Image 1 (tube, rainbow, N blue to C red):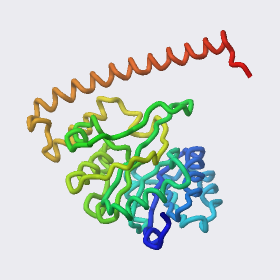
Image 2 (cartoon, helix red, strand yellow):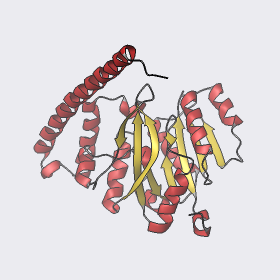
Image 3 (cartoon, rainbow, N blue to C red):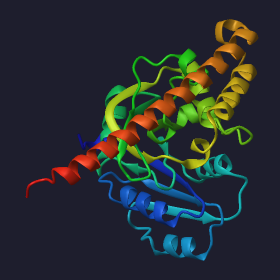
Image 4 (tube, rainbow, N blue to C red):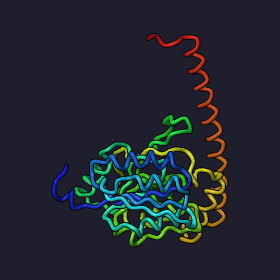
Length: 280
């Protein structure tokens, strides 16, 4: 669907980066190849001359490109800054090293927005490991505020699309909490239910600021959010604390089992290939 109504919609993609030129290049290739015109805003946290040289080399006539390179106060400060830099109907926060699934991703999202008039929407995201092997699909079935607040069913912010009207009620990101993207989504969920897009919109890699934290630290941030919003599980502070501890243990053990199984499976495949090489 590429009609007059769709062409009236504006989309801003905000990319934050710090010392990741390779990742920024990947994101640039993905964004600049979109078949729908976007506003691409890059907020660089003063990574140095090589990053500025790359940003200077991007043709501003390819979509609507703008950037800033200066010291900031962290990831969410950069995201807040990027939001202030561009006026649009729909916003996506796509960090360096994240990519859109195809050149028609934004066009398909806009199609859905025009037809269904949602306030925010969540696509599917595929996570890649260090070897650039896809390891998981981040999907959502009947999301609920409880699962979002507890941290058991969170949204991938790189696959979440917000309208200007919704962000005006939920921004800015809390720069003091590394789970600020979850906090914003909880606020948004409390206003209106999101549209679940049956579409893979995003590829993202392991790592990142939040990905490097321990499970315990991540759940501690989420407990702080629940305390601030009075969203304790079963409305009981002690029960909420005990359930959080149990979930951390469960996820930690599950992660160990998953990683061990993945390593053993890969080792088995490599050994099988050595014994029975593929026929040409």
